[in-house]
Length: 103
Image (tube, rainbow, N blue to C red; front, side, top):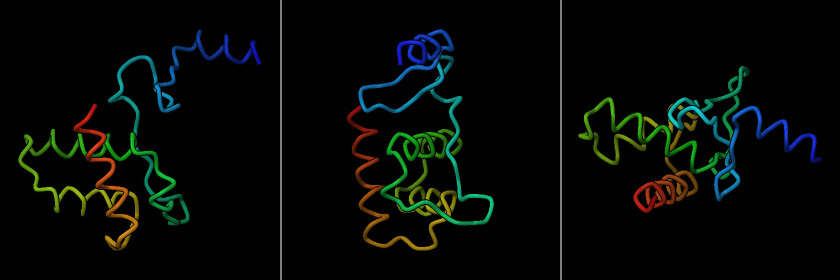
């Protein structure tokens, strides 16, 4: 295990307080993953909030921070392959937005 941990440290990969793995270059270099190659979407609760936040930040950036919350949620859901904004997806998006505002 120590050999693995040392290799990870040397590679420039870091873990944040929530155990999310980042490249040491810039957080924005990490990409959000959409549906798998066969089109299967991950469940909303299986997508780390940090990954959802990356999408939020990108949408806010390209819209010059003018995107409405509903539109941001819709586009984020589309990216992850979620076909509807049900209670589970909305709950995950809301939690991610709160975390983004906190951090």
